[in-house]
Image (tube, rainbow, N blue to C red; front, side, top):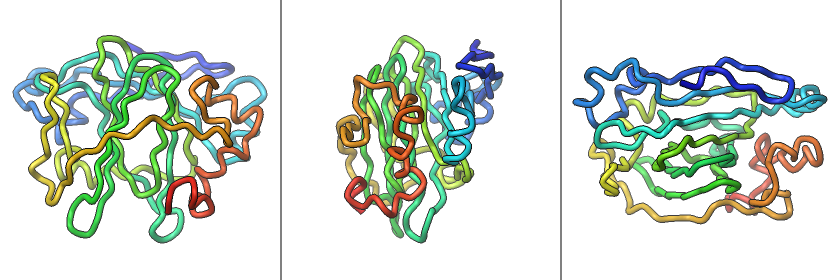
Length: 239
């Protein structure tokens, strides 16, 4: 079990997400019975390297690392609980950006509408890849591999994530089964077919596969302004 992480000046005890914390969103209830106390993933929040704490706090950002060990939850691959973000301004929610540090990830991005879900996208990512979560999209991360998925994220530090919408519908719009099948969540109405999108590359902001995303805070912290004021970056998000 992953209990502690050292990162720069910081040593963090991990916040563990247990299977019983995920009861609503796990499709295989037979597996859940007897595995309630199984640790599914570990979150290490608010990290920094030497000399960077002041800048990170002044920029109102947060850098986190999440580790998702390989596991099969019965019929389903291990995944995160899933959540949405609140609005920065009316109709535009906070975005987030991830980087796969090791392993492989499947990111499900889903956009709500008044009568269900209007868009569902799958982004497959491997080591070095970045995954931008645009405004107004909820997201879930799946580890489909046989090694630990270790990923980092930059996000605005001033808001709390919203879990209720996904919990009420017992998960995301799709489940990824260990058989390789994608199954629509029957609790949703008007779910479109899932489209696949490429991992994120934004050369103008230094967001490329070859560059560690943490270093943006040292070199060009302004390149992360889109996380705080997405309404000013219409071309980036296509708003």
